[in-house]
Image (cartoon, rainbow, N blue to C red; front, side, top):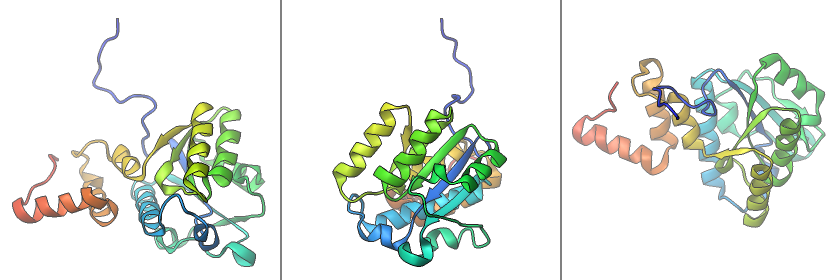
Length: 217
């Protein structure tokens, strides 16, 4: 018989158990992205980057053909990680670049969280490769995008069928916070949610302005 315990599930993410890899959030890739509008994509990417920085998540940033074709990484990422070493690749599958393997192994995390453009190429490649090598893989679906809804949806289904776990950008932030009593990250989590959390952020502004309300902490 199962016994309830006041403890988080093992598949829930925490700041120290995973490596986030943000892949090919670049202008040229975004131009052809149709499954999500550019404003929403950039907002969600900003939320993910801010969450990772706030909680000290092991983060790898990578681009493809930055100077010759695809352009610079989104400023929403660069501004959060201004000193980061961004690995520029030629391979469409990030996982096939030896420098990425070195970074992943140095971080030493069993869980890999992915976000990037396009879902059917630049996310499917590393997701399936990491799963094949025994890693647990999570995909932040709304910080990804593809050339059509069908391309994005089929890519997500393909990864899920092989064991990847889908999530969203706001879910990622709140899963890392998990408890409003965590005062050391409370203010920044609320700030990020207000700036990039959509209607939820508006709700926070309203509650604090009208009632000086706050989550119990």
